[in-house]
Length: 335
Image 1: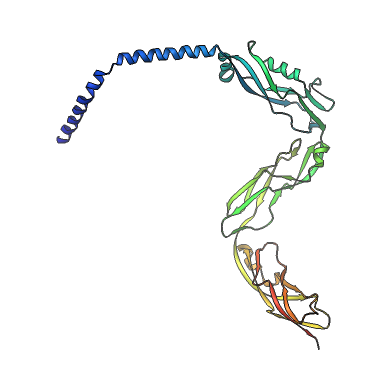
Image 2 (image 1 turned 90 degrees about the vertical axis):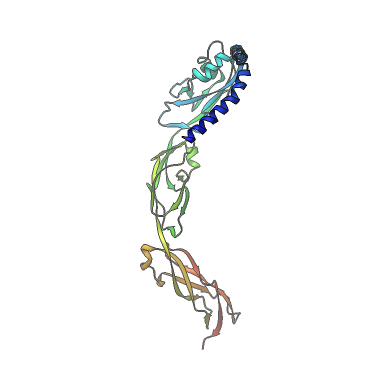
C-alpha cells in the first residue's frame, strides 16, 4: 500500500510540472501552421507534376524462334537504354504504373534476319519504342542505335568436361583419388568459329569447404557465348577420406654405377613418410616404394654427396616426404 501511494505522488508531481507548460503553449497556432505547411506541400507536388523532366529507362530485348540449326556468333545486346521527356505525372506513370514491355525480336522474320545476320536498324528500334510510349512523351535518345548480330550454322563437337573449383577438406581428410565426372564428355553445338576456340568444357566454379566425406554434386556447365551443351549438367564425384600417416624404411637403389666400381652409401636406407587413406592403410607396404640415386659422373670423385629421390609410389598416397634429400658416398674400385 505504501508503494502505491508513492507512485501516485510521483504522477501528481509530474502532472503539476507539465500542466503549466502545455497551458502556455499555443497549440491552435501550431495546428494552423501545420495545416498551411501541408497545403503548400500539396500545391508544390501538383506544380512539380506539371513540370517536364527527363528520365532513363531500360527496355529488355528478347530473341525468340531462332532456327534450330543456327546460333549467334557473338551475344547480341540484352537491352536498350532509352531517354525520354514528359511531365512529371506522366513519367511517374512509367516508373510506378505503366510498364514498358520487353522488345521481342522474332528470328523467323526474314525482314530482320537474313544473309546470316540479325539486323535492327535505328529506324526499326525507334518504331518499336514509340509504339509503347504515351503520345505526349518525347523520345530523346536510345542506345544502342543499331543491333547487328551475325549468326552461323551450328556444328557439333564432342569435348571432355573438367571440374572447375576448389576443394578444401577438414584437418585429417584429403581428396583420395581422381574427381569423377559423369558423363565425362558433352556434345557442343556452335558455329565452326566458336568450336575452333574450344578444346574442353568446364563446370561452373564450385567451392567445397570443410569436406569430410565423399561429395556428389550435380553441376551445370560453364556458359560459352554462342554454344549449346548437351547434356548441360554433369554429376561430379569428389572422393574424400580420412588419412593417417605411415612411415617406412626404404633401401636406396643406386643406378649407373661406373664400370669397375662399387659404391658405398651413408646411409643406405632412408625413411619415407606419407599420408594414406584409412581404408588402404593395410594395403600399403615398403615394396610399393623405390628410392634411388644416380651415380653418373662420380668416377672423377672418390667421395661426395648424391641427391636421392622417390622413383616409385602409389598414386593414392599423398604428401610423400624423405627423411633426407641427399646421402654421402664412397666410390671404390672393385677387386
